[in-house]
Length: 111
Image 1: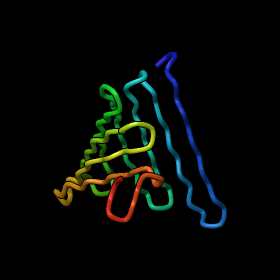
Image 2: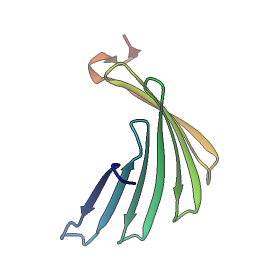
Image 3: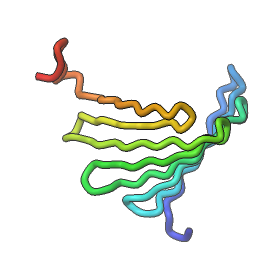
């Protein structure tokens, strides 16, 4: 673990008394592990992110509250466009999300 980048985040908004803790360990430029835990909801999950090639990410994660695995595949096109396919094991439903650059979007789709 020596020489690895670790990012720790602690959030405690006093209005709602909901403490959140997040830790990210960057193993190298392509691999990182993130763990999040909310003390208020007692909800936590661990996610592994692998950057494959140019802009493709693979993200398996485990949710401790639902005791289920989730899996995501994302790809970035250019600077501003991104799409993500993800699956939650509890529902066994795959979902596809396309996040595009607002300046290129028109009502009927992309120009």
